[in-house]
Length: 419
Image (cartoon, rainbow, N blue to C red):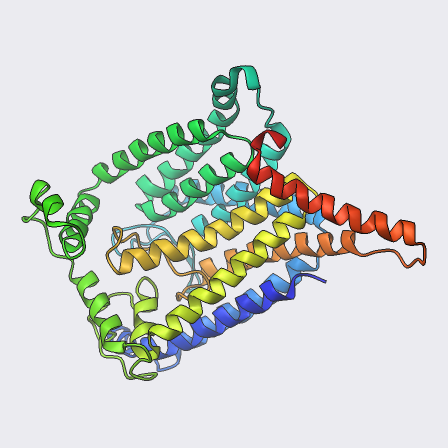
């Protein structure tokens, strides 16, 4: 059986997201002149289909389908991200100043959400096959091994960050790539240099668009509330644009207190928080359900991440080990970037909260990713099952193999040369 804790954790998050969509969208119903149940019905359909898709994928044979699904999402996602640039605006409309969705028959699909899952699988599969570090020429060896992956990454973020104007997704993929490179055998020195290089790349994409530099300035003005005065005096950006969105999100959290104003009782969802059902959904939930509910949500995400790491640790194959961790990282990085950006700790990136924010593409793509992890967990469970025997010696061998399998992954964190 697949890991039921992962499955039920995702189901609970989907339920929370559906309830939040219904409670936080009354202003949007008036704005777009749609029915009271328009948003929540769509989200309910997305969530239901996501659960069915997640469960269906988890029942497949990992030895046959994991590679096929992973490569299909990688190649297919990249293909459609390229194709979007040649389609008419009637199919690829500009929404909020960015063209990130393919709209057909009233439904919108964001190819980047599916590409993220495929990218993680491609990196995990490829690194598990090719990473052989030459200890005598370690830095040179690491550069020759990992450089092609970063070239692929830069090509991908050209379409994501430059053409689609979605720098947040690039940050999630970049952070995930760095961690997987480290777990696959990269040294700390190489990873530090890589992070420096990626920082320069991201700064280039920030400076390319004026709205991103304005967002940095707005964030810096908000940072004066928690940064020391001597830093603000030395780097004065008083001419920047004040970030009213961050101010309203903090006010919403403050208004909700520990236990909230009650479902439907929030006031900042009425035009004060733009995209309250997507980018600022946690702040909308905090106002109506309280800070304790937000802590509960973070607890569920922590439990989900811990269970995914457990699946990775029990997997016999390096590709499955790296892929499972990569999916967990995409979820956690998405959550943290959204949460930290919405309260002003980092610049706002516009990343949806996994499984909770309104929207179908993110839900469906992540449901496939989680289904693939469940597929891996089912294979690990099958390998762990002891044969029915009364032979004490065989039982001892079985439990010894379990310990050795766990020690392999624990040692891989301590000593990267094991990879």
